[in-house]
Image (cartoon, rainbow over all chains, first blue to last red; front, side, top):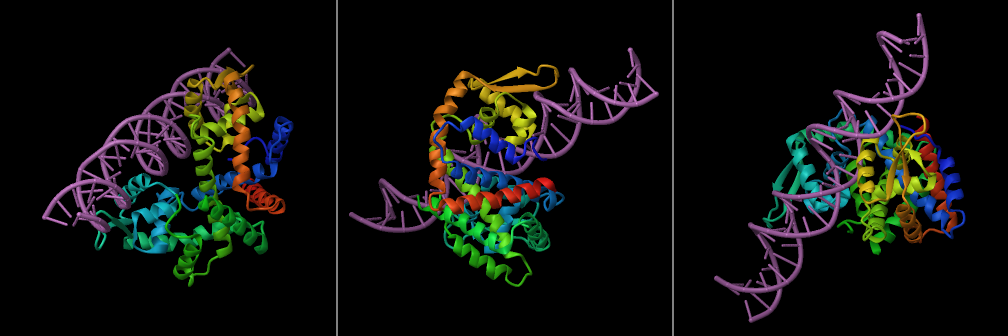
Length: 165
Length: 165
DNA sequence: CAGCCTTTGTTAGGAACCGTACGATCCGGT
DNA sequence: ACCGGATCGTACGGTTCCTAACAAAGGCTG
């Protein structure tokens, strides 16, 4: 699970290797730590909450989006889940085979496909999500409320900036 | 690229849908924003820096690790890059076919495989990385130095906490 | 030095993932 | 009504990514 090197050792190695170059190290560490943290968190949640559910990470995220928003068009779900439409097609096929999700008709546009949870899927999310949130809380346990809000706000600023560009 | 909903709309929908439950919303937004930001940043860097290089994101990360650390054993590279050994096998095969990377023998243990950049790979990283770093700086442009450091520090705390557990 | 346990990287199979191309459908102008 | 362009979800091909099973090599204990 944990790598051979600590984060501090990596930072030292980078300093030695790139010390001569004119780089923005603060940006570098902010960005690379976002990526590292994201991977580590995803791994943690997969190993704890999702381990025995038969759901993949992406499958869970898709279920979550449909749960929060209710019956939705596929393109919204794909955008919200952060995956492409093409990927969603495959994921939905898997979730449909588990009877967690069903595809329904758009009321007026016959090209579009809507997604909705089945009663089974609804029950699954109702059972799973509290545990998921407990593990989310575990992940940020070392940060007090103020730092959690600050973290979320900084990330939101990055997201909004990238969306605008 | 940008979803149909804004982050704020999502937060409202979650509030309506989950308002009744006893959840840690601050943890939830911190964690989900880490994941969203990570995806958005990876997309941005793929579209800008990596677009015309023939490198995938993971390929670049593997190259980066070998570049920083020098000749390394595969298991270290996999851990540092955040991928499994099995995945690394495939990625290395690709990078080897591009002549960016080569596999060498471990001095004493014949099971182990070492990875090193070729001169071509070395030159590629030297050319690519400054541009990569420029785009990293663009990503965090909206955050001042203090908030960048604070962001990196909070993420480091999360990473160290997860590593310990 | 023989037997067993551990550790190594690879392979195999399946899901996720993307860009691209496509057929189906919708819509605006005529 | 029709025809052009825009938009929809899906099929396809290729890569990434994982887990599980594996063979090869090392290391330990007797």
